[in-house]
Image (cartoon, rainbow, N blue to C red):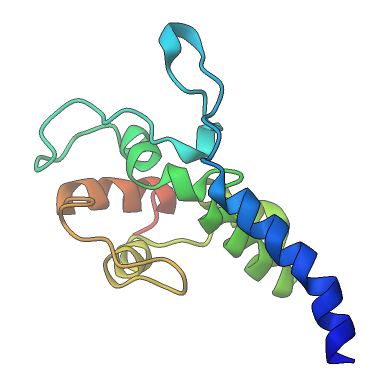
Length: 143
């Protein structure tokens, strides 16, 4: 039996090794030679303004600091969608901006402490002023 397994497995192992020896293909170049990645893999531009001061565009801060995981297709959204389905909630609740049950204190606790696959975000990743804005944006006016 083990001879049969090795007979079947050796070509697969050899093919895998040959494939791994090849350098990864670069994404296709777009205008100006800039690689064109799917939108959820690239951060949006950092919004203008002092990161330590209140009053920045909360939506833009969310898109920059959180969007690459929490937009459609991002790892965070995919994991949250699975959780929502398990709780018999609509899959659209996997996208944070669609949620209606978030409160600022909860958002801040998850961001600073992490949750599941999400690592804790430091004050370098997202400042307290930015987190206050994002938490209010996601909570949609709740206290």
